[in-house]
Image: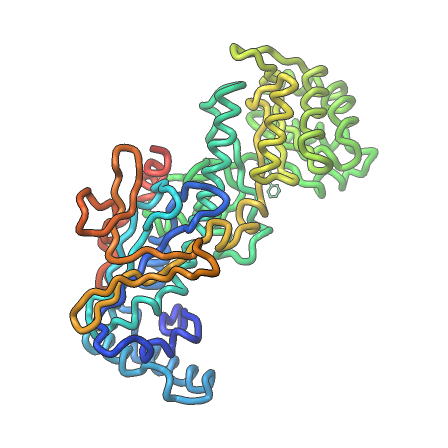
Length: 457
Ligand code: AOY
């Protein structure tokens, strides 16, 4: 049985329905980033979770029966599982979840410490369901964190392009190399799509079908080019390195082609092979050769490779006073690339007079895998409980870590001029949270074009 919602939770949640106060009719919870590495969150990925796991009739008799059996064995007793609660959802709501989810528009860029999403039950009998969904919904941390990292890198590269070159090149300055480095195909799909909220270059093919399927888009949102890997170069043997490179230029006589060039000696490859033996072929080629170093200290190797290629194939000085390689040649760095090393590489290039126009980055593990829920400290907390018909302001504020303090009451997100604020619903100001899900139905959908537009306002 695919995606049994009754099983997509932590074990302890199965016992929680008996733990709320008598008379509880609603649990209202919210999702936020309590800070972290970056100060702004790009919100992305909720629509996938809604479509894949929550929309439509997600409770069936077979799923209840499966859960009944599994939980009896798991807990060693059949008294814990809330069978009646789920049977009620099947019988009374045709298996559709009596839940309302409000959220900021997908692609929104919101300062940390603000409400991004709220979850509440719409049937008072189902007060226990709101936080049963926490486990699944908090997995939103992953696409939000990837989109946030990718956006931060975009702003970093844009700073250097504005200072040293052409900002219109930004869309292809960060290429996703991360498919092999993630823990699953599902993660590659989700994380790869999150990166494409900000950029247009990817080698993570799984992201493309994910966008088509979950973000209603028939057009293409990720692009790539022919590129070598070490096997296609080293199989010519070290003596055949020149022939391997010449073959690349001949097999792809037009457009962009990328060639990993560090199999033996990247400096020799740039100076003698690309820079002398193949110089005329590169200069006469109708396109751009992208040289890829793939080892060493990134900021040092990139600078030296750029200087060799500049000396051998030429460069011009742009209007901002920075050197730009001959348009027939560029550099791509994919080894050791993360937010910090990109800054170091661009700084070292600029300090030596080289424009950011010369380089593109490939980012793999640091984009899609070297992130965790605490990179941006995501949390889902109850802020209001209705008990005996009265709303209680609910919060936590541990003396052992006030950074974990949570918000109180029914929340909304407002924009005061340019300043986002989370306030109580009875205060003035238009709520930026929109209902996206109610009683099993998706109320508001976003296309990937809309997500991208929202992320770049
Ligand atoms: N791809 C730009 C196109 C892609 C890649 C993918 C791991 C590319 C390399 C390149 O130029 O060099 C996964 C490592 C590299």
